[in-house]
Amino acid sequence: MNILITGATGFLGREIVFHELSVEPDAHLTLLIRGKDEADARARGDAVLADGLKGDALEAAKTRVTVIRSDLEQERFGLDEARYDALAEKITHVIHGAASVSFTLPVEEARAINVEGTRRILDFAKKAGARTDYIGTAYVAGERIGLALESDLDVGQTFRNTYEQTKMEAEKLVRERAKSQPIAIFRPSIIVGDSTTGRTSSFKVLYWPLKMFARGFGVVVPGREDTRVDIVPSDYVVRAIGHIRKDPASAGQTYHLAAGPERSATLGDLTTLASKFFRVRRPWFVSPSKFTKYARPLIDRFAFGKARYVLLTARVYTPYLSIQLLFDTSTTRAALKGTDIAVPPVNEYFTTLFQYAVESDWGKKTAE
Image (tube, rainbow, N blue to C red; front, side):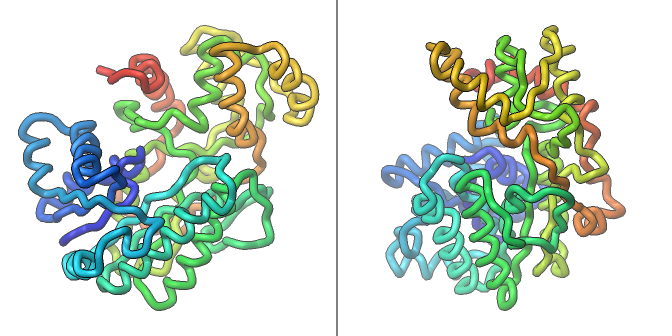
């Protein structure tokens, strides 16, 4: 087995690398990684492995991992034809997780990687005769209200940002290709750190309002206390992907890797847990429209320095604090039936996430 993995330098991608190394002892992994040159790409690949492995385990992993400098925005990933063809001869499986996760990119820039990069990966997988496991996002549902089914995709919804929009466009392409290629689609919701260690390399989305809260900026929250927040720990996501992708019957299916109505928490639940941990008062909740009208002008006018940076950066994530959307997980739960792979209740692991965030100074240093 030779598994091609894209997005390995990202948070979820590196967790997938560690998982596949541990559960597939005979598999070889080929990582497509951007780099200024071959040496830079290899150095970035080595850094991924060193982030989660030490000593003999790290040295053993290096013998099972090949790093190829590549660019998904170029034809044949920037490889010459001979090298591209030789790679296709070797690869048996593809896990495609590379994407631009920026919420603020112009739409054409976001499409260049999220849509066209996906198209090139699917072309490669077809040439290789390889099964593809595509990692999308549950937020292709955009600004819908209610329950999003795993079978739903384009129902005329609008989007909060170009990330959501272009990931929906990419999934439309993937679904069309799935009619003639073996492809499974995985849609995680908001991914947080490992439920047992808290480990994460990404402190975005939910972590930004938590960081503000911890530092005393969370007096007022632009959201509804009863908003359901769908979060899943990274270890659940990688284990679910690892189990489901082994089933040939999963090709052609779409899976919400989400807490769902059964395990999602309210914004009030999360702020209660955070207030206890950080020993601060629970915030006031205000409607996003009122926050935009009254608070933002004050922030724009009077905030400065680090406070201004934190508040302005967090702005792109605040729409997720007032969504009225739930994700059905029926297909996923059926696929995981009989295993111990399930989304744990938030109160069982949220303190672990806080602890890791504090010990790592929100990603600035390595937590012990």
